[in-house]
Image 1: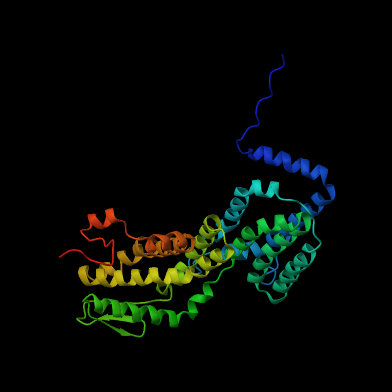
Image 2: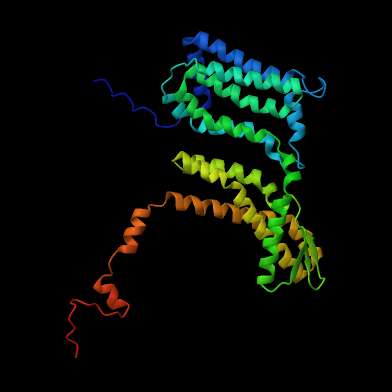
Length: 342
């Protein structure tokens, strides 16, 4: 008697198995495989080998690697590409099950990416070249596999835009600095710490300390971190696209609220323990202790409000009080509009 066949394994395929499947796909689709090879080869050559910037001295990758520094608040830039690949890998089952239907609509997108890259080389602006990278990837996916696969690749491609250095924003944060300084001044006086404001400088009325709300303390330095976190959090926890967009757009307010708490804590610590502590060690660590927890808490709280079933909440609020509950609280229940209690 023949033995029954073993049930199919429910464990996810290994990396080697995925590579083997890719090889099978290449053999079954030689034309698409050739186009994919040309696209990947072109990306590697023009971004990592061909020297186009600083008068032909460095490649796009080298320029980006130099720009991912503490001055631009983008030390994590080198990890964006691996992170995007990991996000796509986590959706590998969705990619595998999606219907593949090559689309010529990918050609205009690829041409747009080529135009962006050529323009970047022409005007010597590497930031535009970095923007061109995800556009080329998305267009290639759309052309080779169609819209359903490209839709799955949209978020990893958009995530790659975090590689673009935007440190220049720090020079345009004066209104935000003034707003944070004004709010912290009001809060400090509200809790009994006399503080006056001179522009972005916070001065203790008793002369015990003074501190300055710099461009980073306005919340911009935390913006990149919160933008990264909010995009990933929204992608993996929220279903509706408008919810994801709203959470992402609130990254700056989250960061500002967190930094208001941080600057206020610096004022309090400076008052209690001296400005050497408040504007020294506490200033350096308060971003991790105050800013990030407040900003992340605000993000999670807003997401909870967006995903809450308000119909159930409304039903609970409007639910009539039962006699048992009324008896437990000592309240009288009225069974009739006529009272017989003489």
